[in-house]
Image 1 (cartoon, rainbow, N blue to C red):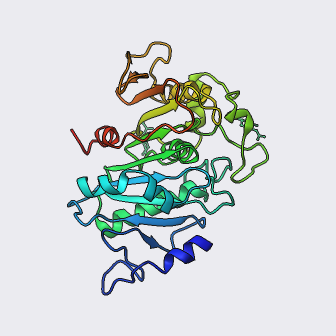
Image 2: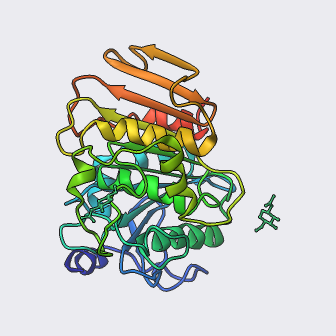
Length: 299
Ligand SMILES: *[C@@H]1O[C@H](CO)[C@@H](O)[C@H](O)[C@H]1NC(C)=O
Ligand SMILES: *[C@@H]1O[C@H](CO)[C@@H](O)[C@H](O)[C@H]1NC(C)=O
């Protein structure tokens, strides 16, 4: 909250608009207040060159990060100007600023947790800017990557695609005792393993009865990750392959040195692919231009 009030000082209170008291100013990071149900901060970057019927990219920060830090340290504001989409940078309300990816609330569609709040940020933005609801995407790093998987699972009706930089499967941090924003060593250490069918069921259970389309997923992970062990890459691939009914053991293709030297791209089916970064630790660099291709903004 300290940061939020600090930032509020910088935010312009734009004059007559239909956007509410604190209207986002194009070309600068702005805060929107009053979107819940949790106290996650809602920061938004509306580009100066906003596309007609713009898309939306939600960019979710890592532990110790903030919406503002991710705005500064990721390429999405530059890409927003280039492609005309709106970027949303949620800011964790929890001490230590990890995301809640452990409570039943956040692991449930409209469950009242952080995932619910982020989905509401998207809904607010679609309404205010007449954004294209079919072009809503999510990405994030580390805790934000975990949240990306959680959002893809809890809000398949909202997101068209997700890109995960060093996360764990949706539900892998699930807390037995119902803890909010709880760390889960078993998962982090790569010891939560299951079949593709079981992992898929974890996703299905987050939005029971949902039978619409689900987001395309691209998963990055480093082979030398000691924070979220690399087994989490395999488990996440099992999860999304399972969700789409692809055979995890028989990927469509595996290509070495793609998209760069030392990386291997495995395509499980048209909607799921993984990129394993040999020798890379927990911080896999964001490949912004490639993200734009995966999201469909760039050819
Ligand atoms: C950690 O997550 C796993 C699922 O990945 C779960 O079975 C386990 O109970 C969780 N640990 C705690 C302490 O909640
Ligand atoms: C899919 O869900 C919709 C909305 O909940 C429902 O009306 C429809 O019957 C469902 N279709 C199938 C095949 O289950």
